[in-house]
Image (cartoon, rainbow, N blue to C red; front, side, top):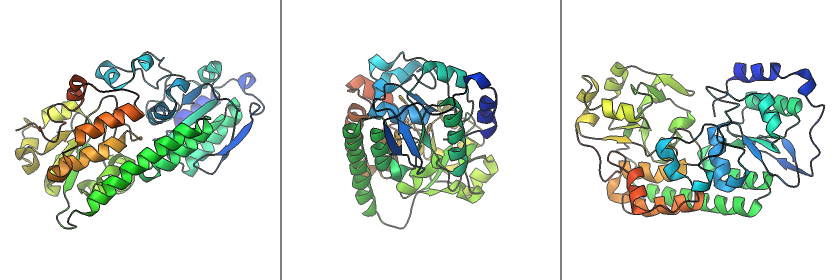
Length: 355
């Protein structure tokens, strides 16, 4: 997940010296995290502090009972996608990412056995994880958030929190999903790959460029990200003129405000993809299927994206896969009404909104 160095260093600097322990708590196991760091964890892990939303999701899938709380309290329809017993976990803030709000003193008062971050394992993240760990005495593990690494990351998390069987089951399920969809995608003709624009924010003008984890699914679906032409790295702002020049075949978004805007905006409505009704709102209950945040929730998002791009081949079975995914990973059995809410008009590839 995005890490704002200045914010976290400020938190570290604001931690009273007296509150800083001299060493890690006594731990019975040493587990290697995704960054190759040996992390000393207790024999029994009873509470985990997720550093941000991606980590919250990943931990919820493996061991929801260990969550110290949600990075942001569940709101409105989000609750419809989560098992009821976890609806009212406290809001604990986030240590990393945009809008970081957690205070390290508060983290220490909560006395978690482990701090978990899920996303990047680049040197900057490693350095900051080491500093937080050293200054709080709380083990801090980094888990690789890349899509292809999801199965391995489940195994790592299972080992870290003392749930190896559940971690292995999640890993096997994730690998089966990835392999099944990869085999089906391999049968598609290599020519004529769909050209896609992903619009974030209420105006749709923020997007992910080449190398951004936020648009990682496009490559796995055999699509072309038109915004790759805008550079390389992460998220960036682009102009309507650029988008018109790129002329995407499909427009995706996770923002309902942008989805409503695109049909009536004087410029957006002139885009051929909009005229053809090929604008899709990613399901977002309880979290985005395509992005927002980019965690293991994208496993069901890949099937959804393939159904959007190739409905003749992938639309059939989407609802059944969604029920299975929510039952296994989200600990929730979807009834007909709840599934209809999640896959509403504009989100269901078989029921797109017409211009």
